[in-house]
Amino acid sequence: MGFVSGRKVKILGTGIYVPEKVMYNSEFESFLDTSDTWIRERTGIEKRHFAAKGQKCSDLAYLAALDVLKKTGLPVEKLDMIIIASNTPDSLIPCMASKVQGRLNAVNAGAYDLQAGCTGSLTAMQNAIMGIACGLWDNVLVIGSEAFEKIMDWSDRGTCILFGDAAGACILSVADESEKQFFISAKLTADGLKHDYITNENNGDNEHNYLRMKGHDVFKYVSLNLPKFINEFCSESKVDPTDVDFWVLHQANTRIIDGVFKRVGISTDRTLLNLGKYGNTSAASMLVALDESYREGRIKRGEKVAFIAFGAGMTLGGLLYNA
Ligand code: UT7
Image (cartoon, rainbow, N blue to C red; front, side):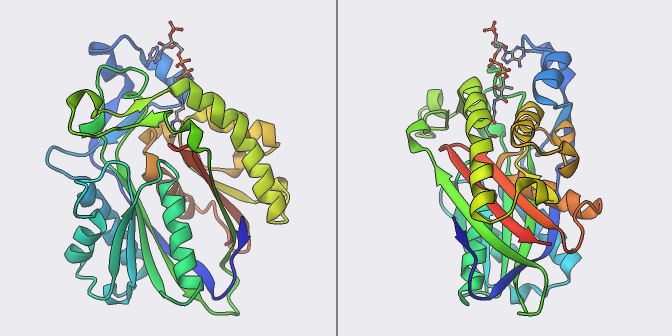
């Protein structure tokens, strides 16, 4: 864990793109031994969206980028870097961020992709914070984007009911010394011995091309370790969890979030849950939740906001922000 030092870094604005195609829980009943009731009760999910045929992960990312650029009014040539976090890129080479950079005509921006499971967008935000705080960059576009279709095993009821497609974005920018909005601290950890909990070998062999998840092991691991991580991160950041006004969370499963909040002693009134609408959108989910939280007026000036994510690896991450 560390406190952010150097130049102050703020959130300039946020963006979102959710594809139109919707799939309701009941639609799984025709080809899987599952039910709307099971999915709702075990996950909190009612429906999810999927990219249209031919719509790629970078297309979703591009549309979320257009949204944040429109909302902030930042001229595109002011972007110094574009970072996309994803577990479902169009291809291994080239990175999707370069495609988005080209389509945006962001002539002054560098571009790279980053993969860290569902913790990816938080990791990308931390990269952006580091680059801005030390003076390398002034404005960084961070995107989390997922399009799951090609790695989804539609015969595996333990995974395909959980995930959905979306893209979330934010622009992080340098703040004046006098500004009240700035990132305070950041922490990333990994428990690499659990790397086999969520995998996609993607080695060209069809049998291994699908996302595989030891769902219950992930559930138990996160339920046990995330409360510890949150308590440690808060204590190292010199804030009590109950003094954090709002929590922006990776949306994995409503039961996980309820259990973790109960263990830490925080009320779920202090967060936004959107699993019902979108399912688990992995690296996109935290940024989608951030955009919705701002739009719904859930994040107020002067409040302390914590970002928390976890995912394949097993990776865990936290950020603390003065909003
Ligand atoms: O985004 C970060 C990474 N991912 C996660 O955070 C996911 C974490 N895990 C989960 O959300 C949950 O583990 C799942 C939703 C994936 C599964 O829920 P669970 O309550 O942990 O179920 P389980 O895996 O312990 O399975 C209980 C039973 C099993 O049947 P038996 O063996 O008791 O007969 C499963 O086969 O439920 C069965 N089951 C299902 N039944 C109906 C598993 N999936 C389904 C399903 N519909 N879709």
